[in-house]
Length: 369
Image (cartoon, rainbow, N blue to C red):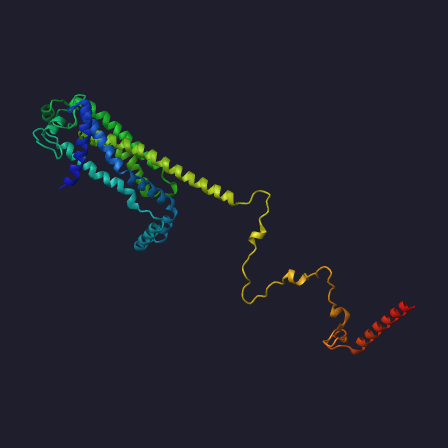
């Protein structure tokens, strides 16, 4: 039924056993133990990217924990509306709770497949998925400090004697592996809990943290009495990889976030004015045209400046200053200053004309004398 899991797992184990078997021997317990360890590390390396996505998704959920709490509080009586708002928030910010559980869910079939393959190495079996009869016999004959890799502590004594081992040897090998696997399980859970945002803590989160930090490690100790030594090696290798991978990924993400914060601060500092410097007002003046219906501002240059005449050219007489205008026939016509209502005062214009003629006659008389 689950052959699509058993065959890939047995194939990867066969490849690594073939590699280490050329170094330590095909029936060496060290070759088989290293084969199991590298089987685990190969599968975990394949799931590295999903693990990174899991960490990023969890960090995003922790950042928006206050908003999630607001939604839960606001729609506490309407579960359907609460679910809709949560889905909307997840779509807007691109995170999913399922992404945080994916790597853990992928490890379950691997664990089941490896457990089944290791338990299938039994005397009298001619094959075990990708292994032939010679491979099955090699695994049964392999001993690690006097204990077989397929043996476990609670195994019946008759079965232990059938493979040439005793319970004491199995206990000596299994107990240290169980303790190390339990300690690594606790350290892995503790390291993950320390990274959580206190604002996102809920009653369910506190319960899950206690389960992963204390109950799961105790469970490893208890179930270790029923797990074969090969499976305990798998558990130890898996927890070792998880702890190292968590530290590596968390440091990498922390470094990326620190670089982003530094870049944002540098950008904000470069755009801010220097201490003591005045802001450039000219750049802030609008250059767009005035809005429709508003009068344009008077042009200072056009109103205040007049064109100067070229050198050697006499300026034209100012009609307003002299009060005279020259018609087309060459005669001088007195216009006089304008009155307040726009009409011309004729008496003023004649008086100014007579005074001008008298001044000319006096000047000509003086010259003749």
